[in-house]
Length: 428
Ligand SMILES: Cc1cc2nc3c(=O)[nH]c(=O)nc-3n(C[C@H](O)[C@H](O)[C@H](O)COP(=O)(O)OP(=O)(O)OC[C@H]3O[C@@H](n4cnc5c(N)ncnc54)[C@H](O)[C@@H]3O)c2cc1C
Image (cartoon, rainbow, N blue to C red; front, side, top):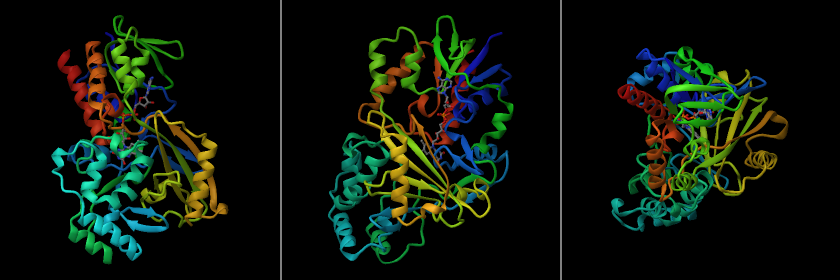
């Protein structure tokens, strides 16, 4: 009997395989990289472990939490993060924590907030207007507009708003005023706890799934023949399948299918995403990392966000050391500067911010991820439906963050892998 094949060993692929195994179905995972885990993976340099981007779990479902904790205990971190804005450090969310700013700046932000336009949210379709209506013009232009360019690689008016959900806090006037005088006691984050494995990096939440999985590494799928039900790999081997689940990014899978209609190719080409560098730094001092993570609004400083691997878990750095990983994002159609330039500029700017001195650095690394976030421009829903309908017509089950082209956190990618496997089971 031919196997069910899963392409990709990220959390969605592992979850799909796990669910199929529970039904005693034969399933093999083929992964292009030399290691498993996809975006949940990590790398270690001279004893410093770095995840591939920030990564905490805030899965709400107790069953999923139990599975993620099955490989070992997790730390429960309160989601306390910070913002860097032209030399000032403000706790997150910035508009609730204005107290460190000069009076003149506070006045501009607060009067902008008080005089903000009043438009019913359901009538707003673009993100720029949404930001102005939630926060007022001055704050919107100086904080989230700048951050949108840095994190989403897009102008706010290019984006739609359905993705926002509860991700961003909309403060009351009372909250803004209180936070302009003193540090609020409340945390206004969309989750109350950020969990992280005590040992082994973020990927450890998947150990229980990985132990049971049959994964072939270094197997990059380069051609799928949906009629012959066969996948060909870069190393010249191939595998026949009974059913195919793919967690490949939609713009990638259409490139390895034969005779794709031009409308589908165009829709896939018009899907937008961010890509980005991870600048990973290890220090010979224990105290460089001060915040679990922080955001940077200054547009002359490349990273949008910086996090501290050793504060997620001390297991991520040698004793007496600390570490930072800076995330520098671009739109997928932007001209991407060379890695050496981004590394140098990031290190120089973080130094100028007073975070460390050149002699503190013992590990310095930069690497690139071609797929980071899905960009919610105004055509996303139509374009992604066109591609998904086509894959459906070929009986290819697409799953995960880039397979569904959705703003999934890890637990949502996990749920999607499970749901996709259940569709395969139902269709058998
Ligand atoms: C900057 C950033 C920060 C994030 N932070 C968090 C967070 O704090 N908490 C959270 O819950 N989520 C976070 N996420 C989201 C989380 O990373 C994703 O939801 C999740 O990892 C997606 O898993 P996936 O399996 O769908 O995709 P992936 O992890 O991308 O897996 C796809 C797999 O397919 C493989 N593949 C690709 N092409 C081929 C091919 N041709 N042949 C074979 N294999 C192939 C890839 O190598 C990869 O292993 C973050 C994401 C980003 C970008």
